[in-house]
Image 1 (cartoon, rainbow, N blue to C red):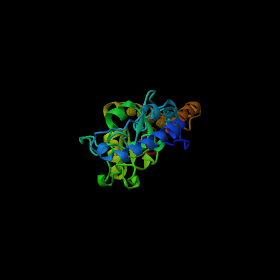
Image 2: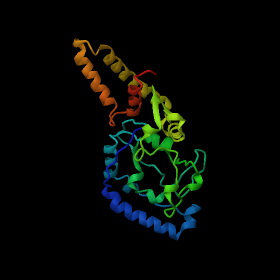
Image 3: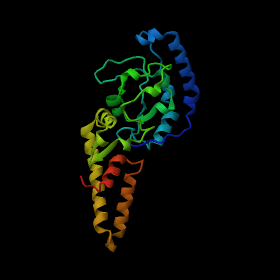
Image 4: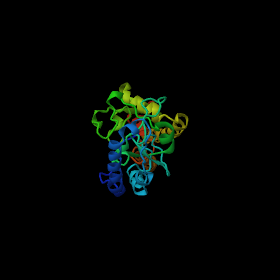
Length: 255
């Protein structure tokens, strides 16, 4: 999980159609507030708008086709709403509370590109707050009072909260938000992810040690150059498990 730098330009589909739908839903909520609160009415959130090809393509490009959470490259991913659009859960075993963040369903800042596993099996409708009593439950509430437990990679740098020791992510200084993000999302499919991350780690470790051991031997200069290039690629935003590799190189593969 790394910082995502999305373009400031909002896709036209969201700026026009999404904005119109948002205004319509706000008016509907004001007219039928109690019915929405008790679940008698539900908003029609249109995937044809938030999941439009132009929207998804812009997210994929900004994220180098990587999942915003686990960093796996994925061809056919989902548009993930950081704040759930249709309903939310403070805890995994809670019933779904409705309505969700309907007024953010077409909001560019609330969207990320995500692999199906992270989106549908682990993040789902979870959106815990440090203090659930401060939750914004309609467009009239002040969302700035919320303190989300999950890290928003489009607005925050995950490297301030999460580090890796070998293939294992862990919260820096036992940070509460780092722990929640790791436990409930990043390590969702832990067995598979550990295997994939460890494979990448071991490959880059071999390259790193090769450079350190043989950097003064002339006949290995070309090989060392290639190894350095591979390590440089491994820490780029476009690489899978970039944060893990940044931590490993910083720690000189000591773990």
